[in-house]
Length: 371
Image 1 (cartoon, rainbow, N blue to C red):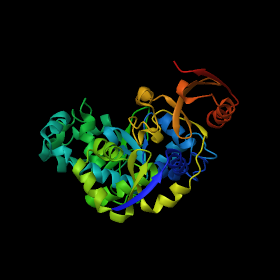
Image 2: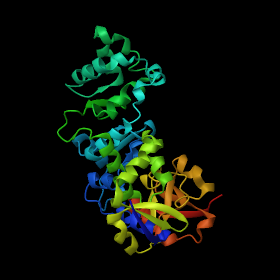
Image 3: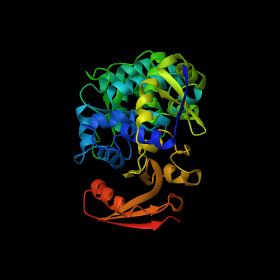
Image 4: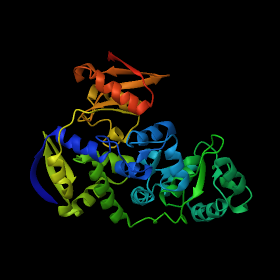
C-alpha cells in the first residue's frame, strides 16, 4: 500500500464525495448509473429507495427504480445486516460473494433458526431452481410446492415461518435467487442464476479486494472503522480478512490524513479529491439514504454524535456541504425543516429551491430550530 503523506480537509473530501454520489449536480443518466454511484442502496421501504434514486437524477420519473428492477437493470437481494439492498448485477456479485466468507449457513444456530439441516441444502437449492422456473413466487407459494416434494416436505413450514428468511438468505448470497416483483403487497423471489445479466460469483478474495475499491470509490476517504462497518458488520466478513484485502491492494490504495483522521482512498482518485471545490450546497435526502448508511451513522464527520438517532430511525436528512444539518418531513404540499441549532443560520432560499426540486411541487419551507 502506498504511504503517501497527503493531507486533505473535510470540506474537500465531502465535496468530492458529493460529486461521486451525483448530489452536487444531480445528473445520473439512468437508475442503474445512480445505484452504481452509491454501490448499494437499501431496498426497503421502496418509497425511500425510489427517492434516493430520484434526488440523484436530473429528470426522474415516478416508479423508475421499480421499473429498473423489473427490467433486470438492477437487482434486489438480502445483503447488508440481513436487509434487502439494490445494486447492479455486477456489483451484487461482488458483495454477495463477500457475504459467503463466514459460511453462516453451516453454523448450528443458523440451521436451528431456519429449521433445516445441512444435508437439506443441495436438494433445496435444486428444488428452488425448478420451483421458480415458470415465474417468481411468494413464500407461501414456495411452501406449497415444497409440501409436494416428499424429501423436502419438512421445509414447507420453515419456508413461511418466523425463520423463513434465514432459509432463503443463503440462496441470495450464492446468487441462486433474488427478489422478484411484489404481487398484491407480497414479496416474491425469482431465479437469478441463469439471468443473462448475472455474472456469477467471483473468487472470494478477488471479490473482497473489489468490494474495498468500490467502497473507497464512493465513500473515501474511509477509515478502518468505516471498512469494518461496511464489510465486517454489514456482510459478516472476518475483520482480519478485510485488512488482508486492504493490504493486498498495494499501491492501488493510498493512506491520507483528513484533519486528525487517517483514511484510505483509491490512488487514482487522489488528484480529483485534492482538486475538489468545497461546497455549501443544500440537499434534501430520504431516510436511510446511502450518503449516511454507507459510512455509518457513527461517522461524526457526517452526523454529530448527539444526533445519531436521526440516522438510525430513518429521518429524512438535510445536508449542507455534505454534513447532516437538519431533518425534514412533508405533509401534503408543505415541507417542514427542523434545522439543527449547531448548524448556524438557516439557508431559507436554498431550502425552498431544493424542496421544489425534490418534492416536485411549489412549496413553502417552514424552518424551525431543532429541539
